[in-house]
Image (cartoon, rainbow, N blue to C red; front, top):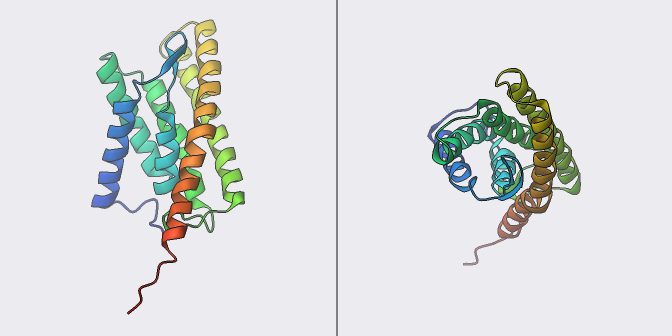
Length: 186
């Protein structure tokens, strides 16, 4: 049985810490695609932590991980984008709430994958809209730069989510499904 998304215990805090550390430490790896924008494989970690542990853990791990990355790479936190990473992971984590979805026990159906895709795509574009508007209205960034950044980041994040994130969660569930059929003979 899955834990409640609101149940906080030592395991939850450790999971958030691991997710944030992994996302923060790997987000610097990327291929530049536009001004201050990269194709980052670390986005798949948002999908994995969101799906496996829920939207709250995904949000907090994504937010803290992005803050860690900003400090390590530039020394300045871009709060709109940090919150955007959390929003993305939270939306991807909505699949955790779906009836019958439990990759830890190997329970995942094709319908879950479709909903995971929908939640992820909506999350990517909601978070980028938020981050872009935050940069324009709070940070005073030029509109044309932000339009290019959000459009290219949307395409890059979608590619990483579809190519790495969804298959990783599917494979994890499949591996667990195969392991649940073991029996002990005496």
